[in-house]
Image (cartoon, rainbow, N blue to C red):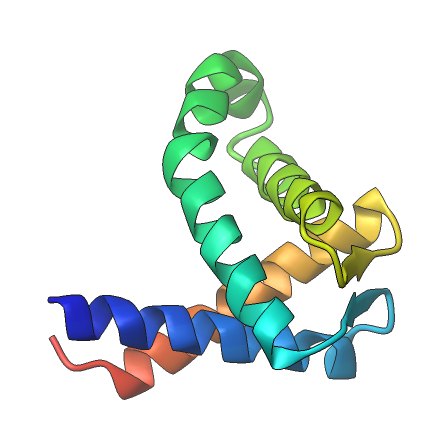
Length: 115
C-alpha cells in the first residue's frame, strides 16, 4: 500500500512538472517544487475539497455537476498561491490546468498501476 501511494505521488508530480509544456499559463521551477506541489495538492484535495463540495452541493446540483470544475480550479489555484515556485496565470487557466492535470494523472495511473 505505501508503495502504491508513493507511485501515485510520483506520477502526480511528473504530470505537474510536464504541465508547463502543455499550458503556457502554468510555471513550475523544478521537479522538487512539483513534488512538493503534488503533495500539497493531494492534501488539499483530501481534506478541503470534500467540505467545499458538500457546502456547494445546491450549486453543483443546479449546474448538473459542472461546478465541480470550478472547485477543482480553486484548489489548483490555491495550491499555486501557497507553493513558492509554482504559478498559474489566472483562474481560468487554473480550471483548465486542473482538468488537464486530472486527465493525464488518471491515464498514467491507470496504465502504470495494477490493481
